[in-house]
Length: 219
Image (cartoon, rainbow, N blue to C red; front, side, top):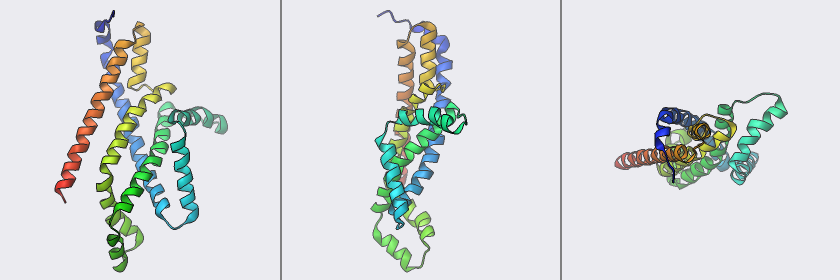
């Protein structure tokens, strides 16, 4: 098969540094996506028709179009329309945050609806304001129910972050491609990149299980 992993050894630190870039993408995108997704979920369960329509239409568009298309539109088309250049990191974060928010909003909405209606009725009977009720009573309970789904979204986002290599972001995948192009040997660096992604996913999976056990003990 003519494989030579010895040539890859000097480039391993260069490829592994992409882990930091990937985790930055994922962490920032997930936080922004979670915040925006929470807002969208509140729109969906609210009584204001216009906001419900907006949230449903938003989710439909971002779930119904390819992620890579959304990223290319933000990276190439937005500067064309506005004249403002967007860096690869910013374009990637914005794309992942907007896309992830569509999925997270559905997860949170389902979690909120799964909370016993008696909780809401009791809070309303006690005169608890709607905002306080959602922040301190409903959402904490919903979060416990949706934690597995959120962790799954986190894992999916980690794997999908590889597409930022298309716009030149120096993540794990892009660095592996650069090493492959410089040595004219792509199998070895891409195999290493795949192994790194697999280990990241396994660590996130274990972390999610630990969090689930701790939450289960608190019941």
